[in-house]
Amino acid sequence: MGNQIDRITHLNYSELPTGDPSGIEKDELRVGVAYFFSDEEDEMDERAQPEKRWKEPSPQKKDEAAAAAVVAGGWGGDIEYSAFCCQECIFSKLGNNQDLQVYSVKTLLPMCRAGDLVELAASDQPAHWAVYVGESQVIHLHRQEIRKERLSDVSSGRPARIVNSWYRYRALPPDLVVQNASGHVGLKGQEICWADSESFAAWCRFGKREFKAGGEVHTGERRYFLKLHLSDDRVHTFNFPSLEDLIREKRRRDASGKIGVLKELSVLNHK
Image (cartoon, rainbow, N blue to C red):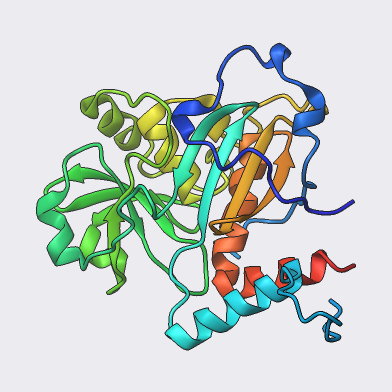
């Protein structure tokens, strides 16, 4: 097994087909491998050619060059993703068509509206998600407890951004988003049925049971696909049986950082 370069991601999302999963060509989806990890939040040949013609760099060399560029730049920036359920795009975080800029909490607060999803950036752990409920307050899952706190206190100086558009599901009305979040404040430990802050916040906004731990029955079919966009022409694809597993893997890679992901994938490609 091994990761394969995606063959369809050059299409715009508007060009990607959606529809009944039974209509999918199975051979087109047999890409990538699945990895399962615990949640991280609470956790070529270089010989000269005779004719000296240009030679396409190997996948390993491309990844190493990308990693070197990251180091030279001093900051890795965001790992870019898209995710699909069968052939339907359900998540998009791509810098070429989205604003991924982060702001200080002081700058962000005037932009926030009740029901917004807010992401707090982090460099060595998965980003923290919260639901903005008004009056500078957010509700979020932290250390196995759902809390209501001031965004400035939760941020601890970390930059933040509004991420309403990353998941492609239809959002609930703002008052219902706030109601969903408020109704769970105070829950602790085994009362909580979300694996991480992202899943909880996304459930509050979209109301889909797939965000809950164990919310999907595992049938053995790997119908979720996570695509890591490392460059314009290089995409790694992994598949999973549930949205919960996909989110866990995405968050694990966020915690590794861009350099870590590039190095890891370079090793995996040459096992």
